[in-house]
Length: 126
Image 1 (tube, rainbow, N blue to C red):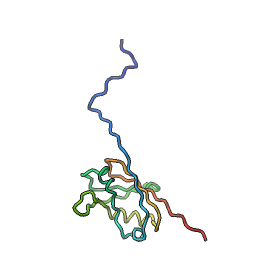
Image 2: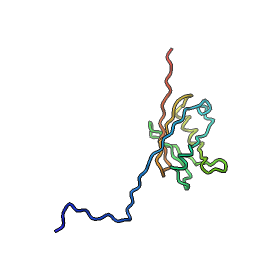
Image 3: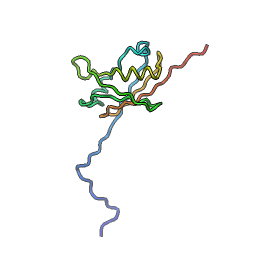
Image 4: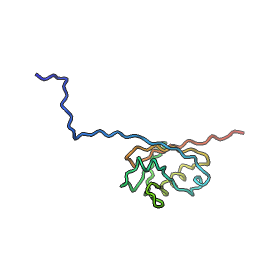
């Protein structure tokens, strides 16, 4: 009689994938707040998170759940210099980012989705 606590062996074809996350921060400059900038990805992000086949990126605003997407561009000869323009400009404009606000990006390896959170700068009281 079989022991009821025995589990059938797991086939070698099942593979568990462990994903790690990558975070970075950006302090909004006056140029960014006026919508005159692109979102450059850190090289560690393009190296470790993006797949070479990724052509689009999806930014998810954590507060509203709104999704912004854009084509990924590469600058120069180095394929790790990647950036987006249209979705970043739209994100900055719609969220009315101000000088010295902080933006936190959280991405998962192997995924072209980035969660974006805004920390508003503190206003000084007079």
